[in-house]
Length: 278
Image (cartoon, rainbow, N blue to C red):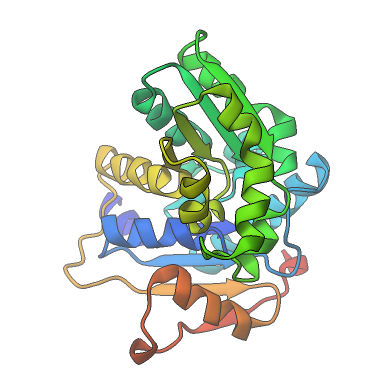
């Protein structure tokens, strides 16, 4: 029975492109696993939505993954969903579901030297207080400074990620001023879109350690599969399937950039689904 479960794919979902940063990390750590990704590009961004709407979207997203692929585990590669709906998803489904908050908090706790940690995320994630609560659960003495960065997701989705581009740089300087003023030595990138802006953020905060939530979630997934003996028995490279709720071509072009796919390798195949059917 366990061997049968181990053959099943891993599902990953996000509101759009950002979760592809987690896919890249998972593919590096678990090259033989089959991955199924859904990006809700027709309803992005989630970060400005109400909690009720976020939970409805997240329930539809995970229903698609489970009905389409019968996943053995799901990674919620979305900070907004992890902050506002992870508890509901875990209660309603009987498979392992990993969010991005707890793995990132553990990494930040280990990384900080002065006990001052910054968190940047979407407005909804920041408003939820999820990162602050999680950090104070592991260490009540940690000082947390948070900043909502509403424009970071559209910047990434539209390709404005170059550290020499004044548009993302000036935006980052404005958003990150509270983090700089706090003296934080560690910054949680609380949205999986944000690692694409890491060069921009590092230029504004050159001495701050950045915590990539997608990377930390990938490590947590690896540990969970090991603990439950759910690693695939396949000895060949695993495949990846991509699904979106809007026009596939633009996603395919961006996915190649996120995943580090060269033009010679070709664009990944992407299928469009009607997420409202789930």
